[in-house]
Length: 449
Image (cartoon, rainbow, N blue to C red; front, side):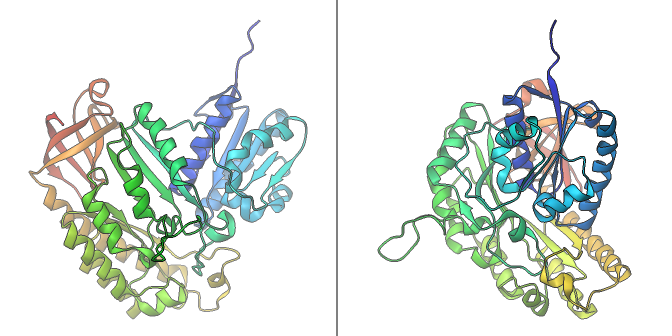
């Protein structure tokens, strides 16, 4: 009699760091002979990898958990796990709220999922949220894409932005060694991956905690040095990195991106607010003038570079005039993509306790006005692609049109065109752009690059 394999389901909320953690945890589960299923109701193990940056993501986790907790009352063998930032923040109080949970684990413990599950299998209810030194990872992630992969280069964050829970839940900065990062990239190259995104919550801080400096006092390990070190990994054709912090963004890094052909001309640098008083209240450590100088410098070296960012409206105490400064910066720079959010107070952060909170009506009004401007500016920026030939790395089929495939330009613009996925997946093709939209393009294939 054959025993059917146990199945697992992972739902991931939040940032690219969480997606990378989920790929690692999926790899561990498959090494334990679990098989993936898209349907949580068919799974023997359900894991929610959570995000606490926004309140609505957190509320969604609780509603999903509630459904699975009911299922567990009828099926006591179901294993329920919560990982990520909500798990780190709530810890044991999650167990009080959802007693059906078997495992609560913070993001630093993603690599230890196998060990923690052993304790669960032997009947324990496990909470793993204590800070750990992140050991070099020998797990094999189950990558969600066969073309592009995330590679963590630094965990944690030492910044203390007054609105952000990340330092509380992801711990202090811990950089991986350049050799370990290169080894993971070489393995990805051997497996046929074409693109790697180097990830860090604050990637420009990479290397500050690693030993070694030059006689002149310059640190041996910076993100710029890392780019030079991994640039020639065989098989990897494109390298991206995220997320950057304006405080640490250097001209040397911009020059490296211009010099190194594999590094894509795409920068993700959150500005959060265009007003200096709000930036100071956020403890961001730069002014809007400094932010503008960074963008000017990028465009000096790479006039065509795509620039994306994040912005928050409705921060405590933000006046209409201060919000207008955010609109002005957005209009002046003209981002390719701007991720926007209305401020939501997060437990354990300084700004959550301030008395000058704005009403939801004001926040939503400002968010709509900013989003309208973002769409207009993105549409303007898109015009430069019209009738141009772009190099597109093919990733998937267009889910809305099976005759089309989709991929991204070096500037990270999603591009659709007619083609056969079996023939083109993982290939870089020259595409003449025939149709431009604010956030995506359509074209026709000219040739394989």
